[in-house]
Image (cartoon, rainbow, N blue to C red; front, top):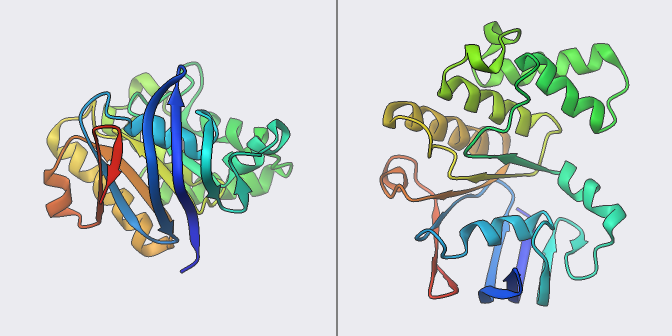
Length: 221
């Protein structure tokens, strides 16, 4: 599989402080990768650097065909369209249905044809087992159901990479397992690279993947 992420001797700054230094790692298509580490160890900074929200100042850093050290602001939205992001706190629009949340993303990323949008939304909702909940408002859904909608949202533009930052942090253990199973299946069935930041070491046993650790401002395998 081709490498979609390549970092070499990268330093990542957060608010002008070094979050991680000497970062060397690569990820290929279809890989399932865990990012472990304590709160404040640099996990989120590393993830945000992948979609150019946190700047990379030194070293070599490429995601897909984009050089993160020289990427122009006008190119950042195109990079982000190739990445699906799953947040811990869902970040759904609370004033519209699950369907409308997904349609909003497609409209914002250039899907002009209404029929094509509806077909794509139906596909991703079925993929995460939420086809019957399309017209529910977020407050009418459980936390696990909301997170499934978030995974559906991440899949809309057929990304090559999904980034999940503590995706089960607000869920009970059983629901958390279901969400991790969905992400693991996406990786194996769709050939999508998935990076999951988590505190839960039990997931590594139940849903095997490669493990990276953030410790002492370093990334270790």
